[in-house]
Length: 378
Image (cartoon, rainbow, N blue to C red):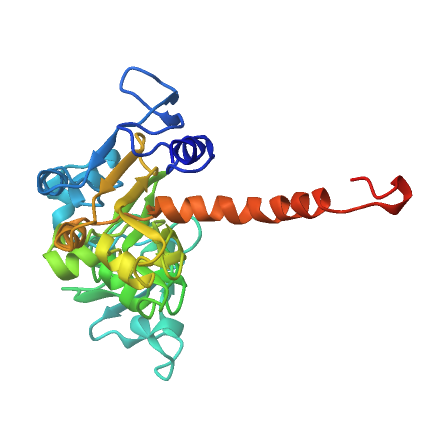
């Protein structure tokens, strides 16, 4: 018996990669506060307890800056209050204006009354100017319809007494935003006089696709990318993230492939799982993988490995008691987490013996063989 115990201690693989210590057995790249580049360090293993779960709830932080109006206007130099109200539409090259002068149809529809508004309208030239009879060339780029109306009224007042006119937008063609990714109809969206928000843009693009990640919508503006959590808008009322879009913005709806978790080790169906709406707990991951194998696993050693952040984290759950699954159900997983269930010591030993046994049997058979050429000597 002492000899057998000594042999067990010498057999490689009889322990779970030394993870049963207080630190990881291999060095991981860790970015410390005083180091610009990651350095290799052994990461401490944290036990999954009620105190740890409470601490994680308090310190949960978003992965990217949220696209609130305050954050977006901070980089553009505008005040936060300025962007809260929808700004008036500014005319640009390519837009079509409808100019109506009351009691003067020759000015309103000079080409005939059977043409559509955009066909009979006045197109803004590439240099931002328009030509109107009796007034001449006007620079209307960057101006509102009210400002253009005042300019035309002032010019026509020399020829028409008590001129009454109106300026309306017939077609919006100068400003666009881009919606790409997992939406039903990706492409260009025209910016109109109706305020265009993140939710409005997604809805005008046909809504989310089946593989869309509602919590990972990226808004790129002037070289800076923000994260928009539309799932939080729906479920937590975070409407402050429903920011107003500006011309040139790019809205990219990510797919769910980033939200994978990996369940490995002694489970019934090891592999990768896609998180539904970025929500999954340790208990759900184990259940989706068919739960741990009762005859091969050691439920006392269940690990969660997290390496997406600057500082990798290792967590340990003692699942030998059934009520430990209550902690597992309250432990939220994050994308790219790795769940590992260790092997029972006796199973690990049996696997080593299984690999050695064919060699031992071969040696035994060779030792009992007799060779006639050598007078039957072994």
